[in-house]
Length: 134
Image 1 (cartoon, rainbow, N blue to C red):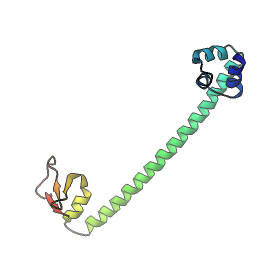
Image 2 (cartoon, helix red, strand yellow):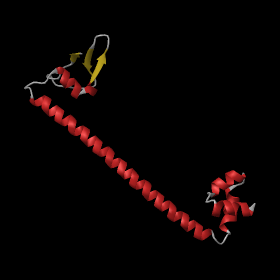
Image 3 (tube, rainbow, N blue to C red):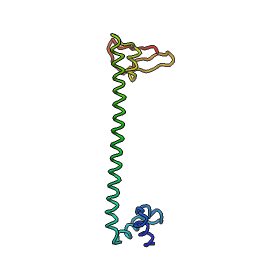
Image 4 (cartoon, rainbow, N blue to C red):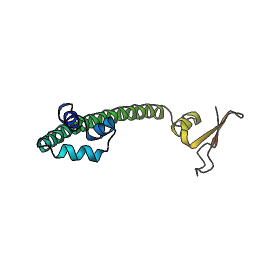
């Protein structure tokens, strides 16, 4: 069994937990056998380096994905800003429908009445439409 554990750890590059599960023995027993071998320190350092490289690679990929997502969010926001600027600059006053679209979270739709109602928890001035027909 000892030779099999050493073979799995050093030659097949299995983790101690995997070996213990595979042989149905405790991880502690595997650890004792492996750590007594003279190759253990060198193998442990090699695995540390390998994991560090893997971690750095994953970290770079995560940063790349985050930057890409941020760029997409920025582009969407930029387009919305341009669209809003165009709509607002075309008229002196804003339509109720456009106001509701820009402030969609402030309104609740009532399907029976087919109208949008300003939410009760929102305090608004006199110029804000309270009810908007859909």
